[in-house]
Image 1 (spheres, rainbow, N blue to C red):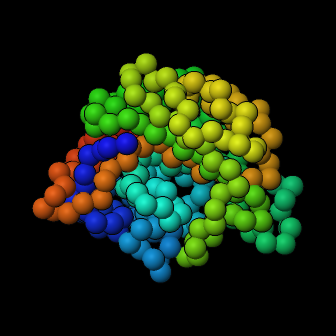
Image 2 (image 1 turned 90 degrees about the vertical axis):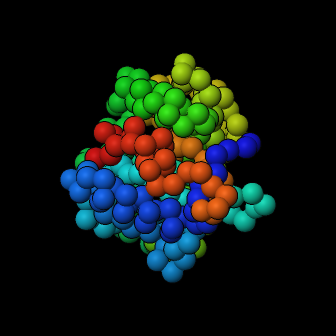
Length: 246
């Protein structure tokens, strides 16, 4: 897959440039707190734009800049877009290694995400990103067993299972580009955001942590070689999701 090239060599540069851009563009627009997943490895860790100063911020939907794939492979992409997390079921509270902050509460955005996605209300953001960026939109969902949930400031473990879809047209039809092969296999037939949300709502994922990202991928670059700076990333990839960050 070929893509647009950013002017940034890593996520740290990109995230801070976007944050500065928002502050300079209109201070009231920058309602975000910028936080990295791993303070000790800022260059290519996930960076989140969080609509709160709370930490941990699992319950909020977010904007993100991170590397894809997380593991070491030949080609790496700057993956930027919308981010939402599903926590662990309450019956796991108190088990060894399960922090209270990982237990999903009624105020987590995940529930709101499923509600709006089932009604097709988030498709407009997908279309807007497609039209503005002229890039395919990619949705990835990765899940982790309850005793292997990624922990801030530590190396992220490999997911238990993950799945990926690409969206290329304004009809927002999903194309499966990476099949789930364990617990997510039943999602392989989903062809829309609505179907995905319906399936997720009925699946038994009580013992899994889930990260869902909807965004575009850019090539890392430099100021000399790239064409996408902070303004382009914000307007083409992130701004359409801003109303859904809560």
